[in-house]
Length: 344
Ligand code: DAH
Image (cartoon, rainbow, N blue to C red; front, side):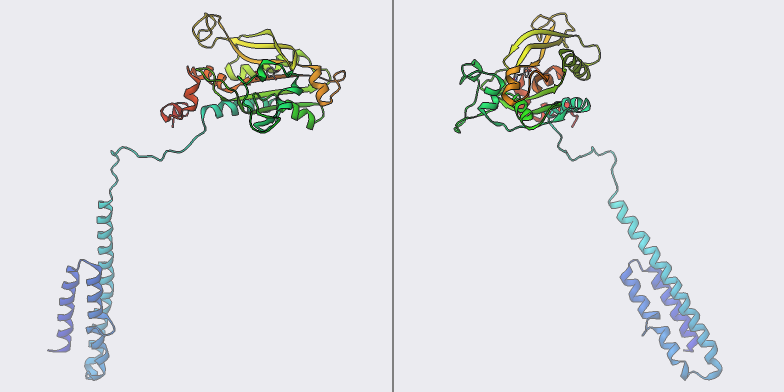
């Protein structure tokens, strides 16, 4: 066969084969056979020397054209096969948007911790510094220096968890942090002390472990009026602007005078209901002017300085805010309960 005819036949043959190829491996093989280093066309080009000079140019030109043709043709085919593979791949991994979503559940803070943070933030915003004290506390700080005498009923085995370390208890309130703050700092002092406290007590409204936040303000000329202003600002921030507030005379060993602070019942709005036991009022916190005996215990001159203190239970506020009927729900760690406050 004439070399030219052979070239044309090769072109036809391989064009068909390549046309039919449907995978990249086969395509590579055909490419090698036709225009590879040892491919048919290359062979022709290499053997041009043996071709009579008058035909060499023409055949060389034809061979080169065929080579170029295949280079283009194979490239296009390769692209076509790749696109087809991708399309198949996409079809296989098609996203079904009607499937229900699955989502990763992430952790979040507990409703008590949220309330504690919210309350702490309100006082921090008013300029109170955050002070912390240990949960295993000196009996002296928890009681004596707070003017709680040795025979006070709160020191009874009923209320306090004593531990097997002489002179220490699980703190029964956050008030000992007042003592720590006054021993550590000089007036003016404005601190809040959030944290866990412990009492031997368990029923629907009492838990052996619960949270309190303590406040202490000491300066020259601190008055009861300042205490009222701070508490009003705080209670309105938590319960809303027009919440009714009432102060009742009370007694705490570390404050004189002492008050208990009530807010209008958030459930019945003062009508009287089960939550407020028909009174229309809810007891929220204890407060008062720092007793001179306490100042004396920490070495602050009670002639020069005055101060006020307050303390409240976080669980109680949380229960009122979210209308939770039983304190134990807060510590059962039932996700059906816990997730109600955050939505996840
Ligand atoms: N420590 C008290 C308690 O646990 C609460 C309290 C009342 C704290 C009056 C105070 C205060 O600072 O002035 O019941």
